[in-house]
Image (tube, rainbow, N blue to C red; front, top):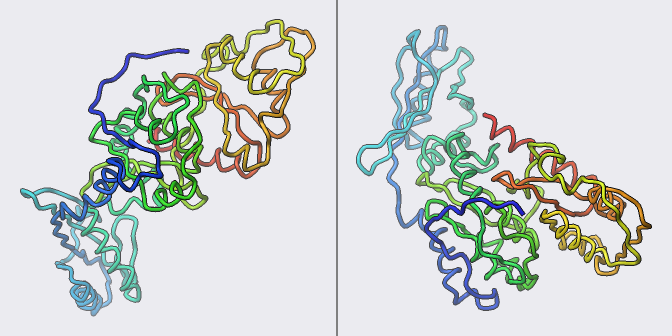
Length: 383
């Protein structure tokens, strides 16, 4: 397997005991501390508004909007717009106080426009919710439901660099708590276990051991693989104070999770040449699991299997056998043939560019969602 120079970082212990004793473990205490830190720090934020009056605005509109903002508990200044004025939301610091200023345009139709948000006078509840969001999260607002996890390009790059760090300690055979402890994160990007994830782990017991082949891959890929086995995923996010964190939650269709691997930047012939080299191959009723292990050994490429989805699809991996008469073919071609029709193999790379293979179930819904998910994140990387 290809390896990289290990990046040293302050180790954050994620989990220290099996989930049956999570209630008393240092990990759960740590995850709760991360989730409670916003309320403990109580970031003081002051939000002010400025409305710029465009030409031909209804005479009473400015007065009406002034009253609406005051009822929402917000300070507002209203003045005539100048040619150089623009709608904008800015943030600055004065000591420990975060200052947010939102400048909007009062239009001819009586609506107010703040960058990509428009409010009518009938939408006072939506305006009040947005004001509360600014007071809680600052100028960026909440990251919920936003593309690219609601991060700026700089924040996304920071997260990606950290997730590209190599996992040196081998988690193979360890149950989730101990396996996650092998993935070290700097204190600038802590892992937070959401209550929904805690409940899912409590029900399942988190007993599935970590697979082989994870050591040497990046933090992001290893974390995604480990969590996926328990029906969990993670996503980066912003706290109300503006710091970054990784949130672990159950996988579902309503919230995007960090993907397991990325499309290869170089073709397989360049990134995994042994995997696509034609060699003499012959198998006679050999278990698929053993064939996958043999291919990994022969090629030096990690081949990871999605055991959870296979079980959910009622695919008994231990009962699948491989029969291949003697012929020259590529390992890639063999794996593609023996996993069809219920499974498929994806040729991927981790956040640091190390190639690996992921064997998972073959469903149209899964493949379409996978394509949309990666496309959205690639767009964020390119911004």
